Length: 111
Length: 408
Image: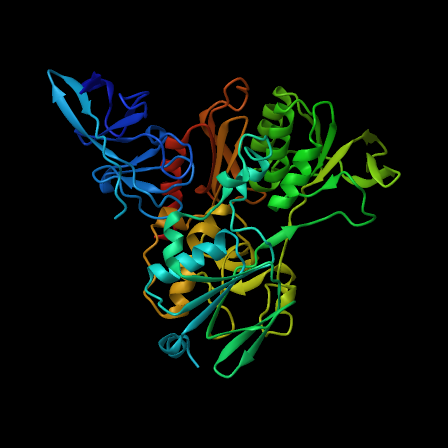
């Protein structure tokens, strides 16, 4: 489990990017209405940082900043083209006012 | 014959065009449950590939042909009948369906037809000179890439998206790069003068020479190879390589006599369709760059010749064709959208801009050239109708949703 930042460092509707998890893949942690979600940061379609995308709070999703596919932050599933492959989700643990992420090693599954 | 009747008996669908819109159509047919035969007809010999990188990472030599392939491992399960390297030359009725005539080989009989033949680069009239390029296809990109050697003098005719992208790629390769644009600013058509001027400043800051407000009167050559570009004001530019980026022409000639029409009565402006891709012919839909559609956002007939449209619209069109319910499209996704990448920065435009709209900088600074990040909102009668953003996708995403309220 890695420490990401203090809880207050991720404002609502925003994300913090963890440059490199233990497996070398960047992860993004989002705050949606006080709930925290972590997914792989790189859009599964083309190099773009999802942490830079617009957070759709009602759908608990983030829009890829480049091509506008939305990824469900709970499941990692894309809403539709161009991305077709989901991104991995990771477990977020809040402890002593800090945000931690337990990285999943699993491969994302196509629904 | 109604579309619904056709759908119930539809066993063969011909998709004409193997670019993004064609491949997306084939995928969508399967996703929507079509189990019949799908014949994909394309005049290029290459498997479907993605065009946006052709003017960027591919042209820069950072990507190879494998990386621009559009095919996915899951496509193998689609069971598609490919006719690559075959040009469609006609569409005629036969029985309750259609025949797509091919230039070589036997015509393809189909119950339903998806027209996705795209568009080709518009060329300058006159003699053909070596060293003069357009950029639309993989072969175009390979030919241009071979000539972009350090020290070469490149003149780009036309300062639209394609011209601006090539300029940004070329100047980073150490090419002496000049863009000539007839309008008062780069990208002035889609973006308006103020944002267009900001774009020109960004290019100039990276070393591109930008000449606006002047047309090109012709090209000069020596021994069959281009040597220069003559401008309408009498100036001339020396050039080793010229790229002509002056728009595109829809590939619709093959549909002459089919009964389909375009927005001005002929097909030169694209195949006229409803918003969902329905054409004037039963069992025939059209999608992508070759279409002209009355778009509810723009309030008029437009050609949306952009990647996002070619990726998203086919699902709507094939749903109409096979009589399946079309997936709901989020309002924000119905706003026309185009993106570009230059100097490693994302440029995004949504909505519609026309002369007379008021442009307001709502975020950032148009003058900041070192790390450009700004958002411009276009208003008509006080209402937002368009948004252009550089380097600020979150702000852009919020405004795009604001624009979508016009549709709900």
